[in-house]
Length: 143
Image 1 (cartoon, helix red, strand yellow):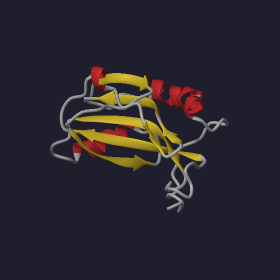
Image 2 (cartoon, one colour):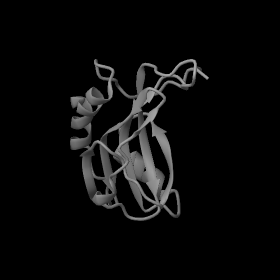
Image 3 (cartoon, rainbow, N blue to C red):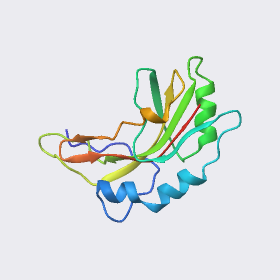
Image 4 (cartoon, rainbow, N blue to C red):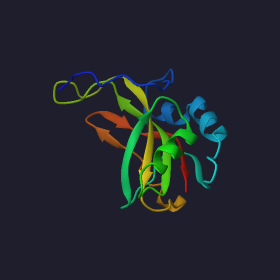
């Protein structure tokens, strides 16, 4: 398809590759210093994968890595019991046969879950979209 994806709000490391994304100090610092939302319990902090499981509801793209905002949005969904907030490396284009790779951009995702998260389920390590590696960083989970 090769059309541009909508622009988003996260910063991008100087080196445009999956390893640099996962090691980017700004993402680590943000995740490590993010407050646990009031009334919530931290399950995991600063992982390079997101939660995986059958109770996934949906996600929203946030303008900033804001755990309190993510939790407040979950609380508006009756079946939501947990959140996973993280940075995701995403291509700037919708990839296809004519464009199999692209520069990256950072999407800040707030994922909603219908059951409590377990640290053992942080197993979504990303995937390949044509020649582009989609990976996560700064992944925090809260129940």
